[in-house]
Amino acid sequence: MSIGTGRIETTSAAGSTRARTLTLWAGRSTVSIAALHTALFAVKSRPEWSGWMSGELRGADPETHAETASLFWALPGGFVVPLLLLGLLLSRMARTDQEVPHYVGWALACWVVMAGWMLGPSGFALGLVPTALLIVASRARRP
Image 1 (spheres, rainbow, N blue to C red):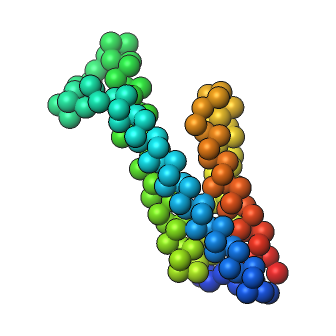
Image 2 (image 1 turned 30 degrees about the horizontal axis):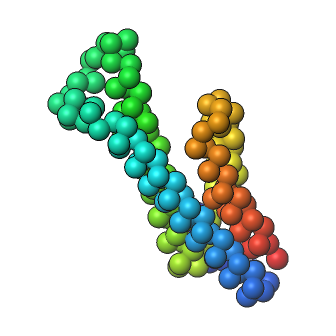
């Protein structure tokens, strides 16, 4: 069986419904976090867009372009696109009654906690919401 293609199988229909609902909300909250991050940094980085599109960062001196490079890695070069795709995938898996591997929630939790600890107070704390939902959904699937 391929990863993520197994149907949710529990001993009760209530467990399956609960796992599906939790996974759906994990996906929706992940998409929301990606959208909020994009909205925040799109406004903040707006003056840099023309430089990015003209190739300003290619071969640029890191010290001279530190601000524009950090904004680039905060938006188009960062985690927003993969996070959005993960949220959409989680939502689809929930709607098609597919089981999300239990390690997804735990790996996401490790990343969120580690990045939050390294960065300090930030939006990474929002990542605990889909993480908790995925872990609880995984436990709800257990017989």
